[in-house]
Image (cartoon, rainbow, N blue to C red):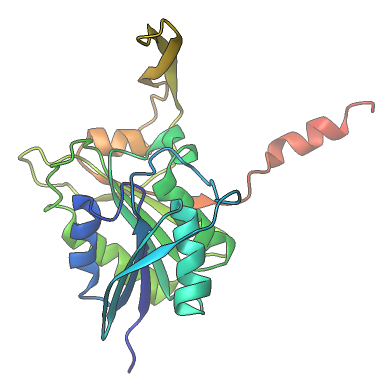
Length: 254
């Protein structure tokens, strides 16, 4: 019986420790093709490269394992992995492990999640994994058993068309993870501002900065789960239609 073909990417770059740990876990589950950005691509969301050529560089090619770096975005990596390297749909796409949470509104900015949303657009089962720790040297060791369990379930059961999974882990804090919570996306915002500075030529430049503000008191959200030391799983869909607003708009006089 052939092993599942698993396509792996991330947005922190090909050498990120989170990706290396994810590869280590996923090697137990199937034949791997890794296509990851050759530099950090955090916050790129669903960007694709259309103004410059894309390049891939082969790093490893052995039975059951191929690895490439890519000059493009995480979504570019998925497209190239599927259409150029595999020339077929993988059985599973996994992205991460992201250095930092992708809970709540962060899903809209995330290159990690854009890669799996791209999979959902093609009805390929896909999972994004993120850790609530932004450190480059974050400890991912508590994530492995849950990654394996969630991935095996998806390989066995599949996912609904047009959906993927957004999985977030609490940072390692000395206490065992309590379990898994299937949750909804919490309501939170980034309260943003720009730090204005001047370069040596006295020209203005700006750094985006902000504070994450959780506005949701519910106990069924991804934010609640992570704060309370659970792994959160949010089923995420590509349909952005506000279905509840259709009836309201149809009552307007156009």
